Amino acid sequence: MAHILLRHRDIPDINKLEIYQKNGGFEAFKQAVTSIKPEAVTEVVKASGLRGRGGAGFPTGLKWSFMDNNNWPHYVVANADESEPGTFKDREIMAGNPFQFLEGVAISAYAVGANVAYVYLRGEFWQVAAFLDERIEDMEKAGLLGGKLFGTDYELKIYTHLGAGAYICGEETALLESMEGKRGQPRLRPPFPPSFGLYGKPTVVNNVETFTNVPMILSQGADWYKALGTADSAGVKVFSLSGRVNKPGNYELPFGTTFRQLIYEHGGGIINDRLVKAIMAAGASSSIIKVDDKALDTPMDYASVRTLGADLGSASVIVIDDTVSIEWVISKTVEFFKHESCGKCTPCREGNYWMMHVIERMEAGEDVEANTKLLLSVARQMQNKCLCALGEFATMAVVSGIERFPDDFTASGIGGGHA
Amino acid sequence: MSLIEKYPQEVKKILAKYPPEQKRSAVMPLLYLAQRQEGYATRAAMQDIADLLEITATDVASIIGFYTLFHDEKEGRYRMQVCTDLPCALRGADQFLQELCTNLHIQVGETSEDGLVTIEEVKCLAGCDKAPMFQVQGENGIEYHENMTVDKTLELIEALRKSGKEVK
Image 1 (cartoon, chains in turn brown, orange):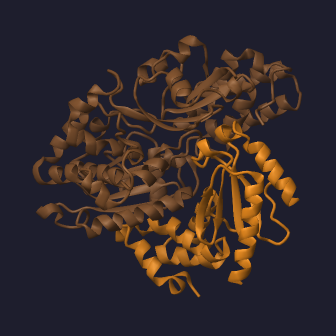
Image 2 (cartoon, chains in turn purple, blue; image 1 turned 135 degrees about the vertical axis):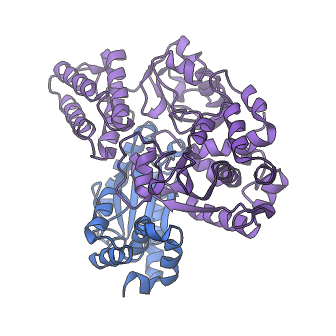
Image 3 (tube, chains in turn blue, orange; image 1 turned 180 degrees about the vertical axis):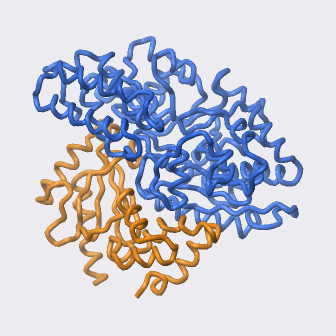
């Protein structure tokens, strides 16, 4: 099947405006602005079943419909902070198929009445931001951005904004704080961004991949999109496959593709033909799935992955083979979250610090059994007490790892990560 | 020379991105500008930014402290930042970093004797399928290097060393 998001893999040079337009580019935006009412655009997106691709899976059209129409101006912000370990899809989309992403942002802005949209990129995406700036300039020159668009009164500007290396800024309210020139620390919610967002104004924040779906949904129709994927997870998804597989990379596949298909048909199987031991389907923020035939044959959609006691999240599938100790895996994830905790709320700041220390003790050979119990207890005390999802995420691999792989938390099972 | 005297066009362009009453939003882009020459933000630059945005120098310093890519101390001319997070580590990133440091006779976090490169360990850079990988932060912004080996990295360092001489 031809790609819907990673179209640069089928159409060379689609990152040039002229080629993108030759392939139907900006027709959907033009049609929306000239002949569809903003609320009707939102209705199409709602009907398509599109859900946010950043990890939470919130229905996109519904989010747009929450915008407070008694408070103006409205903003649209694209979340290009992509920082979840194991996730590298937005970077490919922005570099390969940038105009489709920007068209999605533009359509969203029209739908919610925003005249300014920002693309917040993680600071490390310096080159991608410079590249997008050039594409935005191309659009301005071609009359696709600016004032009096397509002869109407609608006007739109898009700007890029670089973060500077903080995972927490992927959390939408932390991202907004960061955009306002402050430390990226999450806000207490509610209110949510559609009522109190950037500069306190109603704001739509969506992930890059989410926006990139929108132009085709508008041009091909909600029913077309809904027919792809499964009942609860409409459409296609870019799965970022990493870890101990022969062919890591991004794979755009319909929701409902099984783990086995992704790993063996697309990913070329496991390095040295080892066995799959565990899968983390949502990057470092995953509960660790213990792999057996049933798990491998589970369709990757939001509801089915939940039956394995895990979440699909951003579909960043990290594959762990039988040479790896799960204790080492969680030492890596905890180190990550300890570094990235923003420090605002105590359970996350202190909890991650102590989880790291307990793991270090264990690895130094101190009573593994007692320290495993202590580690589990610290993780459980963090759960349901943190201000945002980061603290919660930090506990998932720890709790599921200890519960599902007890042999890896014994004197002989710890350490020995893969070199 | 103040930041605005040094880069008048760029400062103007940055400020134009945000509503006039929300110019604090420009603090991060201005810090990138301030770091361009020396690789870190000087006290004077922090004060320049604070004056320009009508915030305090402490506010600016708090931003530098919070975000990994801002620095208030001089290090190597190039910061080579290797990702060793789980997906990269599953593809040999820890070993790569260790061997690289051994070859350069430095520890992680240290700078080569000639002040050219600082080797740092960083968190996920969204290049998990092309590990071992790292970014180089230098005067021209940030550049990614993926599917790297120690040999290729040593060649890159050599190339940076030579290009530096030409600049000087």
